[in-house]
Image (cartoon, rainbow, N blue to C red):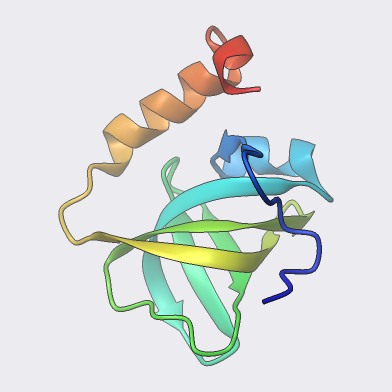
Length: 113
């Protein structure tokens, strides 16, 4: 399946929240959030920092979990185009995850590049 520029092999994607997503326009990132609403072509996520992001979905993607991880390309500071989604279940602690995102973007950024 062609993911239109999605990373392959051992490539890593920076973990972002809404606050940091805008710095990655045009790049592939990992974004975790709670599903607020979804339709066949779009999903609205509340990110780990409590903000709203729009996801342009792949056809047939399963959003049957409260919390999901989306790997995709950042189109602008509000929108990500999904390449792949992973269900994280209904009991995922977004507050703790956001602390991890903040550390991965600052003090320990060198470990995630």
